Picture 1 (tube, one colour):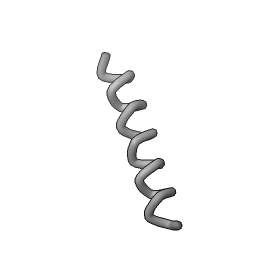
Picture 2 (spheres, rainbow, N blue to C red):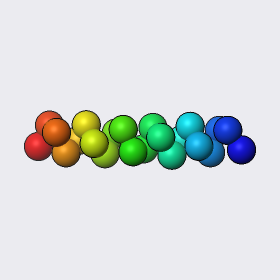
Picture 3 (spheres, helix red, strand yellow):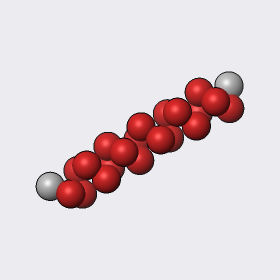
Length: 22
């Protein structure tokens, strides 16, 4: 579903931001 994709994208962005902050 679209919700699953959106949640996956949010997780991906979150992990990328976390790596950049580190």
